[in-house]
Image (cartoon, rainbow, N blue to C red; front, side):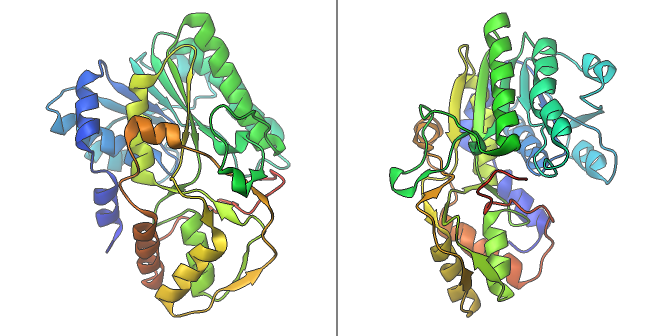
Length: 338
């Protein structure tokens, strides 16, 4: 992982299974909310899979594109773009009704004190989108935050576990799921609900936050003592392949890695690589926000990138002070206040 170009090259390599799935998928792929942390690499992976499959279908990304060079970058990689504000009805209704829709729009950070915006983005907008794309198949990104904190020894919540979100972000995310589900039943729209936590990119994520703290000898709070993570490239592939399992009633899938990772162990592994002793504060609690993603592993296979590879890549990235994205996950949050 020498630079961002190499990182994105590795992250967007499509598997042979994804290439074959692209051949089974009729229609173009429209990605709503492409401007987030995962959207650009998801789109690039989709385009590479389409090209390697010898197909002519298009990948189209929608975002406000209000700043930066992302729109030009995507266009350069063969991804069509549409500048639109999904909360603007005129913009939304002007979008092409493509067969395949991946919905990545939403709001998390800044929810506290601005709850009305989060509810509008996470629960109101999905209904508008679902009506416009009622004849599409939809993969709607959601989050493991719809589940409660559960005993670590339980191994995480599977899809049958009762939802009980903590805090308004989790509650509004469950609202997103419920609204999409209503319209899936109403219009017989095939839907997959994609409950993800936490995607890992060298530039952001749980591992980066722990690594930076170890490298800088800053205290690491272990109160939320266990986490799940998955390589962003694997999560992107699962999302694209989920288009073929969208159904009504909706298909719900948890998406994360197979391990329940102790935060203390992760920090100690970074400590070995950096030659530093991690500093810990707090005491591990018996509960944590954890997902059991065995269903997605059965459907799509285990992640291609292992946790030890992710730790080594992240350590190298931090030690060489490469570019990062300043968007903390707040994985330590136990009260749902984002």
